[in-house]
Amino acid sequence: MSKSDLSLLNAAAGEITQEALIRNVNNDLQAEAAVEEAQQAALAAAAEKQLQIDDDNDDDFDDFANDPEVQSLQEKRLAALKARYMEEKAYHMQGHGEYREIVEEEFLKEVCASDNVVVHFYHNEFFRCKVIDKHMRVRNLQAVSTCR
Image (cartoon, rainbow, N blue to C red; front, side):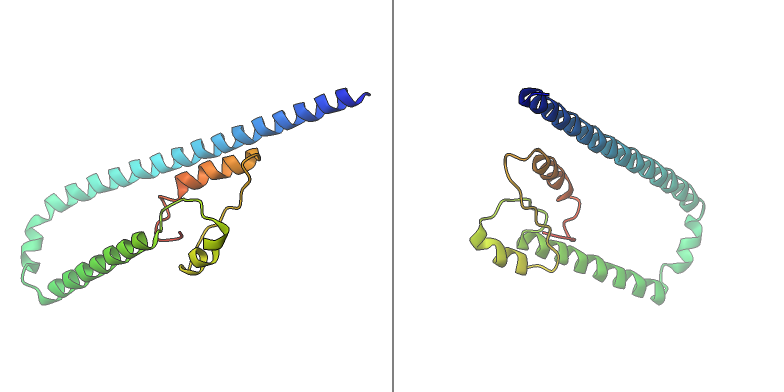
């Protein structure tokens, strides 16, 4: 077998590997999307059912309108929602939810500024780095509070 035949075989094997990787990644993404759709449909059905139950029980809520315990729970929940909003706002101000390229000099400053950070070291000529880069861009918006 000559060197040209061997290089052709290596090139073909590389292309097959890349195609399989892309196919697997696409299958994984489609499976995740199907699961999310099913979850959203289940949540919508549960919300509809709860709405029907709530309509039936509206008269029962009048009894609790002036209950101090219910008001206390409402105030606590409102305070928790406000705290969560402020926390997410602070995360956005720190750069959470962004996917950006940084230079070596900024690396330690960026990484040490947050508790959770996802870092992807890449090379422009590597196909797999481009695949990971694509997925990181999609996922960064979903994990704003988790990492930066």
